[in-house]
Length: 87
Image (cartoon, rainbow, N blue to C red; front, side, top):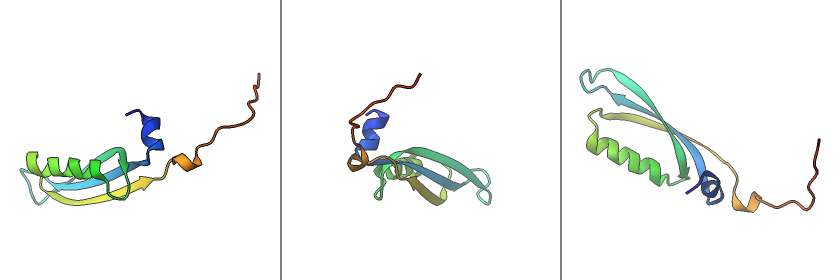
Protein backbone atom coordinates (compact mmCIF):
# COMPACT_ATOMS: atom_id res chain seq x y z
CA UNK A 1 0.00 0.00 0.00
CA UNK A 2 1.39 3.41 -0.94
CA UNK A 3 2.00 6.07 1.70
CA UNK A 4 -0.86 8.36 0.59
CA UNK A 5 -3.27 5.41 0.40
CA UNK A 6 -2.38 4.52 3.99
CA UNK A 7 -2.97 8.10 5.13
CA UNK A 8 -6.35 8.20 3.41
CA UNK A 9 -7.28 4.82 4.93
CA UNK A 10 -6.92 6.14 8.47
CA UNK A 11 -3.32 5.22 9.18
CA UNK A 12 -1.29 7.61 11.33
CA UNK A 13 2.45 7.94 11.74
CA UNK A 14 3.25 6.04 14.91
CA UNK A 15 6.50 6.21 16.85
CA UNK A 16 7.33 3.79 19.66
CA UNK A 17 10.19 4.16 22.10
CA UNK A 18 11.02 0.64 23.22
CA UNK A 19 13.15 0.08 26.31
CA UNK A 20 14.58 -3.40 26.63
CA UNK A 21 17.06 -5.28 28.79
CA UNK A 22 20.39 -6.12 27.19
CA UNK A 23 20.69 -9.92 26.85
CA UNK A 24 24.23 -10.12 28.30
CA UNK A 25 23.67 -7.45 30.98
CA UNK A 26 20.00 -7.60 32.02
CA UNK A 27 20.45 -4.82 34.58
CA UNK A 28 21.14 -2.36 31.72
CA UNK A 29 18.46 -0.88 29.46
CA UNK A 30 18.79 0.00 25.79
CA UNK A 31 16.46 2.17 23.69
CA UNK A 32 15.07 1.25 20.27
CA UNK A 33 12.96 3.68 18.23
CA UNK A 34 10.34 2.13 15.91
CA UNK A 35 8.35 4.21 13.41
CA UNK A 36 5.70 3.08 10.93
CA UNK A 37 2.23 3.99 9.68
CA UNK A 38 -0.32 2.21 11.85
CA UNK A 39 -4.01 2.35 12.72
CA UNK A 40 -4.74 4.14 15.99
CA UNK A 41 -5.88 3.29 18.63
CA UNK A 42 -5.47 -0.49 18.23
CA UNK A 43 -1.99 -0.34 16.58
CA UNK A 44 -2.03 -3.81 14.95
CA UNK A 45 1.34 -3.31 13.17
CA UNK A 46 3.07 -2.33 16.41
CA UNK A 47 1.51 -5.26 18.26
CA UNK A 48 2.72 -7.63 15.52
CA UNK A 49 6.25 -6.19 15.83
CA UNK A 50 6.23 -6.53 19.63
CA UNK A 51 4.97 -10.12 19.38
CA UNK A 52 7.85 -10.85 16.99
CA UNK A 53 10.27 -9.19 19.42
CA UNK A 54 9.13 -11.32 22.35
CA UNK A 55 9.18 -14.54 20.31
CA UNK A 56 12.43 -14.15 18.36
CA UNK A 57 14.74 -11.63 20.06
CA UNK A 58 16.74 -12.11 23.25
CA UNK A 59 16.32 -8.68 24.84
CA UNK A 60 13.38 -8.79 27.28
CA UNK A 61 11.01 -5.82 26.90
CA UNK A 62 10.92 -3.32 29.74
CA UNK A 63 8.47 -0.70 28.47
CA UNK A 64 6.98 0.80 25.31
CA UNK A 65 5.95 4.44 24.93
CA UNK A 66 3.77 5.22 21.92
CA UNK A 67 3.11 8.53 20.19
CA UNK A 68 1.09 9.04 17.03
CA UNK A 69 0.41 11.98 14.79
CA UNK A 70 -2.91 12.66 13.13
CA UNK A 71 -2.42 13.05 9.40
CA UNK A 72 -4.93 13.47 6.58
CA UNK A 73 -8.24 11.63 6.91
CA UNK A 74 -10.60 11.04 3.96
CA UNK A 75 -13.15 13.57 5.21
CA UNK A 76 -10.43 16.27 5.29
CA UNK A 77 -9.29 15.58 1.73
CA UNK A 78 -11.09 17.66 -0.89
CA UNK A 79 -10.54 18.78 -4.43
CA UNK A 80 -10.16 22.41 -5.36
CA UNK A 81 -12.32 24.26 -7.87
CA UNK A 82 -9.58 26.61 -9.06
CA UNK A 83 -5.91 26.15 -9.79
CA UNK A 84 -3.51 29.08 -10.05
CA UNK A 85 -0.12 28.97 -11.72
CA UNK A 86 2.64 31.19 -10.38
CA UNK A 87 5.67 31.86 -12.54
